[in-house]
Image 1 (cartoon, helix red, strand yellow):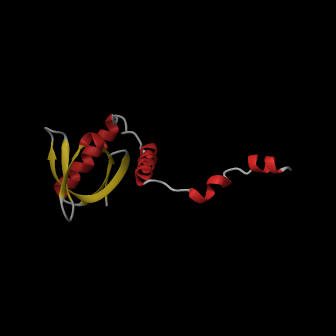
Image 2 (cartoon, helix red, strand yellow):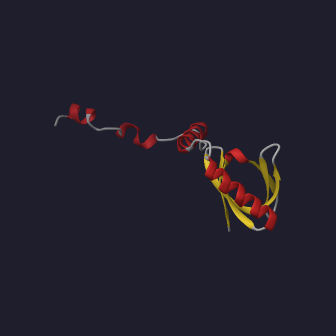
Image 3 (cartoon, one colour):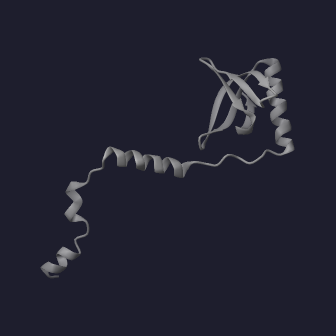
Length: 116
């Protein structure tokens, strides 16, 4: 192999020592990876799933025990443990009390509720 061919086939050796990434590029790369991992919001629940969800919510509300709520939040499914404090039928949301705060969750983003 001649000297000219060695220069042609050396791959990326010319730039090996000068790899760097600007903070803006790194942030854009992280955002792109996060967007690729996002999952879409689940479709409309069927009647049996709504019935089971409603029964669990009403039982937890009446007997004040902790539940695990699986819900969709900005492209990911999250799980939180808390007690159901209120049910707002007019706005179709529930209020969940956590040890440090309370949070309203719309029923359309809730995937599953189960007792702890």
